[in-house]
Length: 141
Length: 433
View 1 (spheres, each protein chain N blue to C red):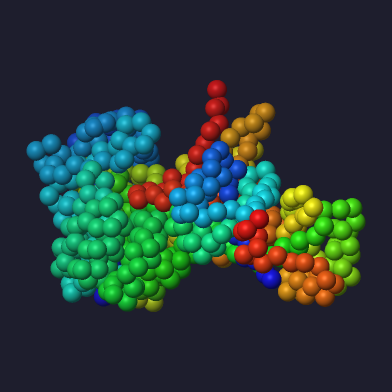
View 2: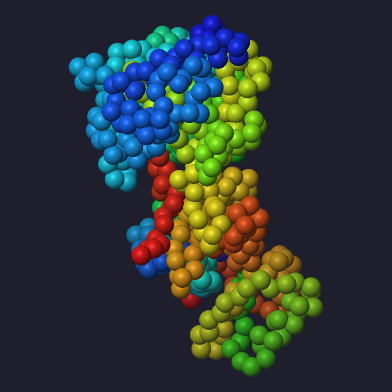
């Protein structure tokens, strides 16, 4: 249930994200989710795409610094307390969350989690009957 | 191999005798044939008769780059133009270029000293040498060219630029030696990697690199990436061009061909000779040159000199790596900063590529220094905290070497310009008026 996420180093300059979007668009790669983490002079664009290998190839051809990280995608009811419960499970398992980003759609919410132990994180969530999305599920949303 | 054992291994006493005779000779010619030198010597109240030995050199006036500009183009020639068979000029990025003229004998001395350099770097008559220094007014291309022919090697006169062609010819012609600037050598190394041609298919074994300062770490980087042994060749247009000196197989300093170019070290502020072994600004007198002799020319290069005989058998004095240039020196918040210091820090850190750019500015009446660096591909990570830790690490290392703390900017891969000639490493945006 691990999903491959791409992380791209971008300088804080006009048009950098546009260029990435254009490169992926031309290569026929679709983005399912993304987030940007930034400080004063650079940012890290994290994204999940329909074809990770293709995206890696075209971005590296264009000299972008890209790395791949495993993440999990938690699919939970869009109601008060449901995220708190999942967080408690992760914390109790001794797993540390490095970062996360989320989007909700109607009755459900999707949370992408990057932790210091991704395999253990996936395992405890499943043990507790929480639903994880596979990469293929995510692209269908 | 030692090209000219008689002079390269001459005893110090014999060398001094030779230098004394040649100094008297060149002062005589400069005084009588170049109004500029005559006027300067008269101002100091000396004539050629005051020069009895090489020790008297300290009585002579200095010459600086501005003197060459002020006498542009031919004012410092010591022979009629009919005797001049070749002209060269510096790139002249600021103001007028400086022009130098060579007689037939000067060209023969030049090809002699370049042959000595090449032999010291292990180049032989069996080697094809790819000359990727620019050909033209710049002394690099033609200087190496004539030296290789004199040695008996095979010249591949590529000149600079057109990197794809460089790689193809290097590969197809089986070049054994590459002569260019160290920054272009690194640029070529990366381009060869990108070309996909396996390194084993090249016959390159030696690099003869010069025309800009580089560090021990940059050498290691070039040697590793190209799979060669890299030597430093030293020279400057005003003195002759490349070939004023070079390293030998022991790479423990650069041998200077002091039977033609007499070196001194002075304190750049007091202009007095420094104590033996101490660093100082290198000053040359061209004791055999006819066309345009240089009397006590201040190079602005800071170095040390070692007069001990070398393990290679040569007695020719050795200078250390150039420690900096007195005119490249940036004064930032009152602190002297040399780009070479920044380079040494970056090259010691495996996380960074050996390319950098210094941006100096003045904000609210305070000088600012920004150091732009690229990470090696494997060090661009997903974790913001690690990237920030890297920034802090290099900032700390730079601060301890420079004495001021620069701002660090990590930039995208390959975004710092790879220069094909002399690398541009400093942008000074300060408007001081």
